[in-house]
Amino acid sequence: MNLEAVLERTIVGASSCRRTDRDHDVVDALRRREPMAAERLVSRYGERAYRLASRITGSAADAEEVVQDALWTVIRKIDTFRGESAFGSWLYRIVANAAYQKLRGRHSRRHEVSLDEVLPVFDERGGHDAPMVDWSPTTNDLAMQSELRTALTSAIDELPATYRAVLVLRDIEGRSNAEIAETLGLSIPLVKTRAHRARLFLRKRLDEWMTTVDAPTAAYAS
Image 1 (cartoon, rainbow, N blue to C red):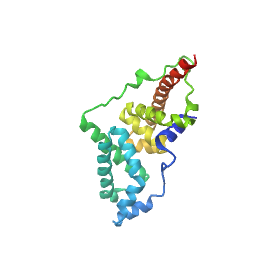
Image 2: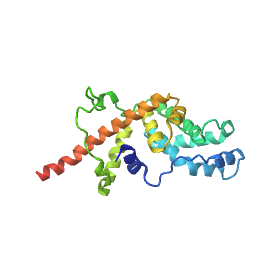
Image 3: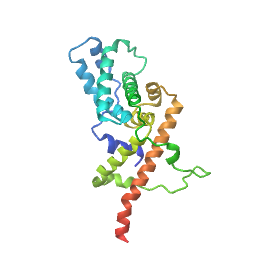
Image 4: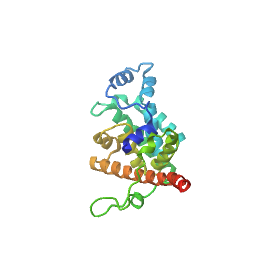
């Protein structure tokens, strides 16, 4: 099972909403100032906006404030949406900007790690110097799902804010590299690099977690 599937199963869950290109109904309702337009917007994008905001800020309370402010901005500025990009990309950009502003306002780097210090080491042929742990079968064990979810969430929270945003938009929300680049104000090559480095970091953290999980079992068996 690849890392994307693990993210899907442990962080998002089967009920997660993937992106939709059928947002014209929401846009039209907002532009016409229909009474239920705001409720429709929240129903379609509230949860996903919160997921992005919470990953960037690392705070449930801050994420709630970010989403409220961002969705209100979307409602107020809907007439500035020209349709040159997907509505979802435009909305995510507003959410991300609000989340970054909130993060800067706290003057806190949280517990973000330096990826260069913890990413896997490769040999001259591009292979891993240390063997990678085969943790994928564990994802099929229902008893381990909760622990894996906790470990993976903690690992994601260690990533720098922009890496977390790229990971959420690409591997959880299913956005394209071009959409993410536009949303976060990054180049496409940089989006690809950050997504790759984020995945390597998560895999390393899962390897470490699996080692601690297997250690008691191995000791008992011996």
